[in-house]
Length: 306
Picture 1 (cartoon, rainbow, N blue to C red):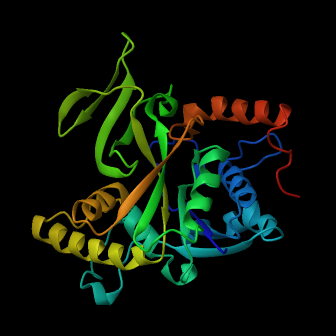
Picture 2: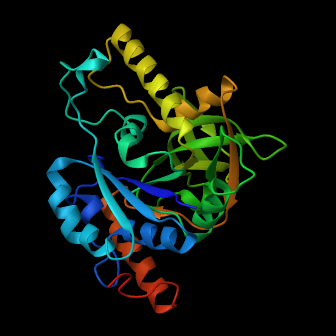
């Protein structure tokens, strides 16, 4: 069954001080980090990749990865603009940063059509297990409309040695479905070994085996209408609060609202794979070493795609 991989590659990378992190080679043969996402997705069964990106890096993206991938999988490019369409009522707002991950997904609406899709970040490595679980869920004939899913990662497997991270800490019900997502900021391991963060401006200690969202969501096409409603309400609220130039509408908060209203259910598909990513420039060395080791162990071919 057709299903698309959506790679969010329009971020500004403000914490990464070494150039454009989406386009920084990390693999043994010069692969980009998101090239491994495509490889794992193709193995799982996905048949199209959609890059949601910026127009200023489109040419480099095509040259470094897109033209090569197009020999193995259908490739499309969509653009997350900082200027909004006139029909939103906020087309005169000027801002330098994107509007958040909900808007990024909506930017690919036409490319998605009616197919189910998986969302991943361009600067995160997720491992192969979650791709297989999510593809099987999305393409199952038994899945009902409104039943979505997410890859659930263990918090201790998602920490960075280079600085703090932000994570959506997940609460899961007895049926294995997501009941809430609590955005938690500046998470790191303390000198004493505890995992600490900040929520609502207050410090919190988080169990290291908590399940977290890594922005790896499996949705069907019905989510597009729901996300459009969420984004419209976000714009109205941001206008009322005077935050239109800085506020972002992000997927974990949108999903949390939709779960709370009973509009959707989200099956959490746990994975024990270790996450790593390129949040900071200091992450580059360890990420490159991980991919070198996996190539030498035979986990990935080198090069990934010819």
